[in-house]
Length: 276
Image (tube, rainbow, N blue to C red; front, side):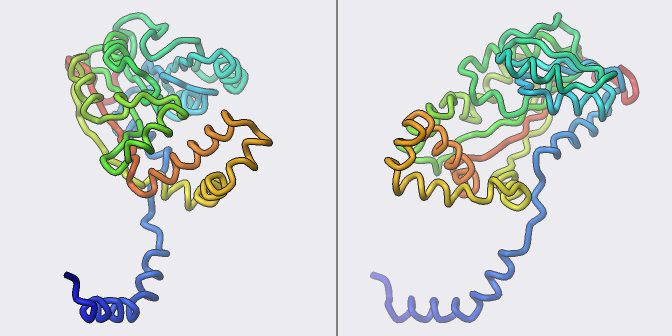
């Protein structure tokens, strides 16, 4: 049994340092955000003119950045025609970037043509991870590189939480397991050069620097307290998606979800810095 007197002494001791503790917690840990992925690309020292593919490019933000910052020839691929059209319209004149409809499992590139496969926040949606990583391997030159960023579930995510969150966010439960991802990487013949476990870091960055993320905990609380209010106005499907989006951020902040960066390479001699 616990000792009530000892417990009171512990709380009394905590009261003496609580203000200092809170002040220390208010100090930022300097979290990195999504642009830190570009630093990993810079460290690869791929030459200008290298061929890159952005898998799941959305409206083209990072495909355009890879072309503009590093001088790569970039193909952005996305399964949603609307996104591909928007990406084409957003590409600045003279940028070495093109966009095409395609999927992670069927890239519109010839085999052995790419120096870099970039895939950000996509593979949690893909059921056939083996097929996706085989396709990455197919399009890579010998010594080519892969950068994958993805969110994963952790042991803290309760089964009931996963049962709601993953379907509403269109995520594959198996794809969000690190062991499943690493097995698919190995089966494709790719090597893991580095795995960076981000934990809550990007969540902290968004909380500190992106105003719309700062209110997601409050929004989740309101959605959960009075669901009928929001369902009546926006419909059940939209309510579920909004709640899932809010919980995604909250769960990352408290360790139920965790981001990872995988840096991979294909067999063969890596190109020397400054050579294609």
